[in-house]
Image (cartoon, rainbow, N blue to C red; front, side):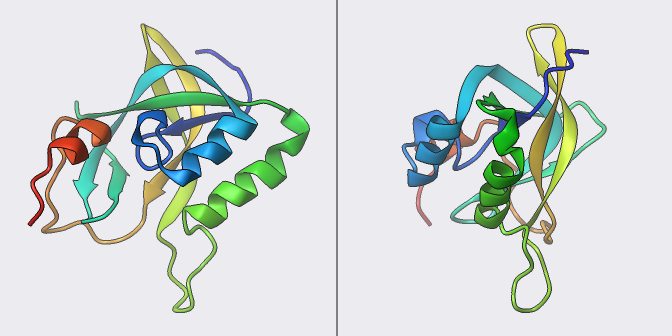
Length: 142
């Protein structure tokens, strides 16, 4: 397993190709490492995706990044925690949790931070391709 520190795996609004304002933060503080995948399932929550870990053979496609300056870890990840709703909402709930996961890149395994969804996903459509960018690009509005 590759032991590079301060890695981040993104699969949703933080992806480079989606042109979301949040990606500018990634571009400024992180460097692209590679395309990769993580074991998990993606759900369509309407305006955003939700990823949950899965021990099966389902994979989520995304991008692996490395923090440019290790000494900025607390501040940089704190900003991402705020963006992802880690800090509890008024009702005490959180949307996501930051955790470590194995990321698969061309036969190598990297251990990186990822944001897993904490809410209820039952009844939500599964994004079976594991590819958020492709799914939302081709999604027909309801």
